Length: 317
Image 1: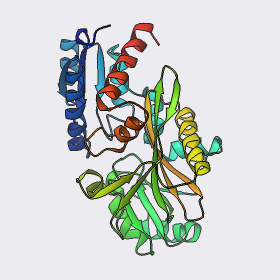
Image 2: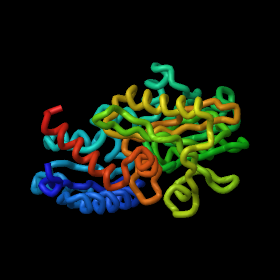
Image 3: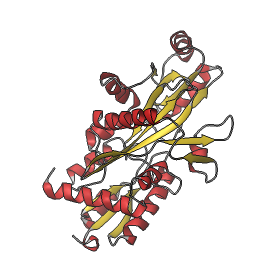
């Protein structure tokens, strides 16, 4: 099979709060596909994208999308209905990974290392919720929207504070998950499915300036964070983190690729936070960096994912 015979559409943008990051990922994916001989076109995720896809009839769709509706199963459902093969997880896997509460319930069932949480719905009595949260989880908490990525809407109270006010800010993005604030290293492990089996990337530690964390600004602004790969942790912890990432990928029924995010405490306790079914592909993204360490530079990674999706479509799976 020669790549130049395959026509690929890269989906980008959309209505998500992460649309601009999506466009950055899409631009990188397009360049990689051009380098490796594919025909490629970027299509914006909007009300006209269905007619564009039907007109182009691509061999493969690469959803370079972040946040809903591109990452939560909605777009995947559309592509299934249009009978187009695509990179990444199917409807069910995408939806379960995107909903942090659902994902955590699955992780718990599989014995993966998670921490307690509390769900807050829009319209809830925030003062009453804050009192109950402090009773159950303590005053130091992390509040995050259930269905967003890139740390959008996340409120951290490492030293306690006004939980009700923090909830109000996060609820602007929809339902919220509240967890105890855990002090430790931020680490991540990517997963890539290959013909030789599913492989875990090296553990990467994410470092930010003192008293800062890996928020939206520090994720996507060059120079605002650094990545240590492999992370300076023991071989035993490395194996545990990689095993957990592989188990989380399998438990959610994900496909092709994923990235698991963890906190590693000072006492070497592993806390699985969430799994991203469509990791970023920007110049500062973690996933391509990890893939490079297992032999897939960026061009090879994108080619691998597209060819894998095409073969899956050909086999009818």
